[in-house]
Image (tube, rainbow, N blue to C red; front, side, top):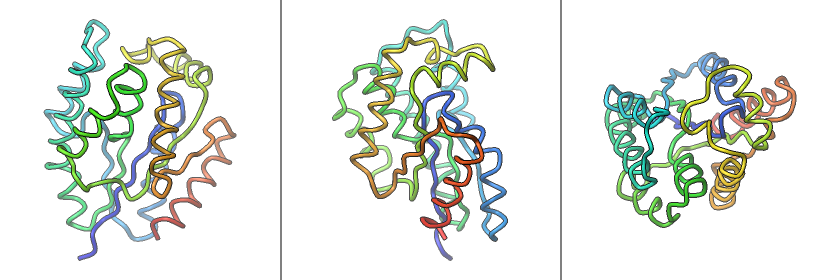
Length: 206
């Protein structure tokens, strides 16, 4: 059986990930592929409980604690959801993965890049997405879009400088992994972004 494809969507809140996750599974399934849609942190019962802790506005977690909780949730997610689906030949669409930890916990919160790299090697070794769609927007655009639709969580309440660093973290990862990470201008009109995403998925995965 052919192994499934692992596709992740990345970007700061307000970049457009959720919007494109609404149509992308059907776009792929229309080409005869079964898809599992999931998210990080989360994706499993344990992961969802850890997600609640990580996003709780009342928590003041140390950056080390955040990173360790993220990777604890990720280990469960890989073992219980991602790897089994890929072995069955099912494609996995995931809202964020390890690139987000580099962007938020390292670039954003100041944890050493090398420490995240060590956790990455330990928790998922050679497993990497086949394709990562990174929706790039400025901190101002992301903040404005998020504020317009919901009450911000603990991360979303951070200031502009934090999100500027998060963006730089994502762009650094894109430079380090240019073959799998595609940078998409998320500030463009929705239909333009969708056409770009469709083109990338077709050319990289089919």
